[in-house]
Length: 375
Image (tube, rainbow, N blue to C red; front, side, top):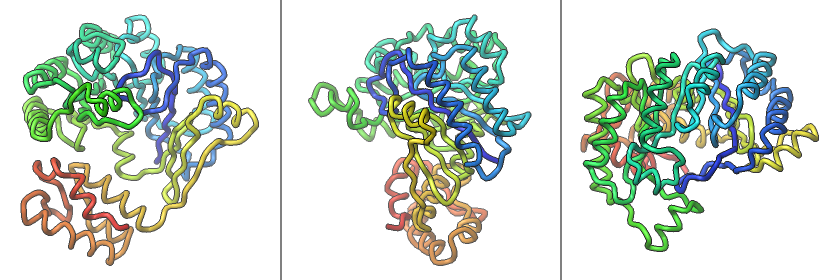
């Protein structure tokens, strides 16, 4: 069992909050597709298992690609790996790209899941985020995807936007949940260094939403998703029964995956590596027959830290039996000792051999995780 992530590093324009690697050089898409196919050949033996259960095209903006581009990629994927018949195959898409014609093309391809970067159903906030779609386009994209036969649709929303009130957030949630999507990812805005929004914040031209307001928005998120039948299976992810993101769940379970394309990360268990964040550098290296990547072998403590952090984000939590099996009694005792104060205060819970965060614990999850880390 393994996963494949393909990074499509092109955007028509950059969102003001985004720190993911992308460039507006769409004229480089044809040679980029060639390079991706060549990278697959160079790295076909990276995964410990040739069976692939999830494929995820992210970005950037994968919906800038044409049907013929996708056909070439899927042909190459199937040459090098065994894609399971029931594999989850996801494409990230911008709502304004999802015309009826384009959705019809996607439906004829192996894609069975769409993840839309909606972020808000409020045009004022969409302009602030420098999104290129409108609220109406977002709603139409969901409807058109449903009409095209997609039964597994995820949308991304953001909260804690400058000037956003609890009522604004409530209206966004109502719109999303009434649209009948199967999955919702909701993220509190973070100001990443180097982004336009970070520069506006540090220049005093906008104000960040306070912690109390952020916490109120998260509590409302939990309330509304629960009332509408979506399970909170990870801190930022909510799904109807049977519609969890299998690809992301595999990340949290530390299943091996290969990342293809500029800036894409890979993990094989003992090590992780990441490709160069440059389209030009990527194309040049691949054309010369090498993979432009850096690699690090993980220490036992680093693997323990990753396991604890990723597990604690999920509803299942940290399976202490698996923790001891993987990392031994010393690290397990360290984890149990450091979580006890949070169990006493109710921020964390211990049941069925698993350590989980309570609602109040989620609100201070970074603090709790830091206490469990080994440095």
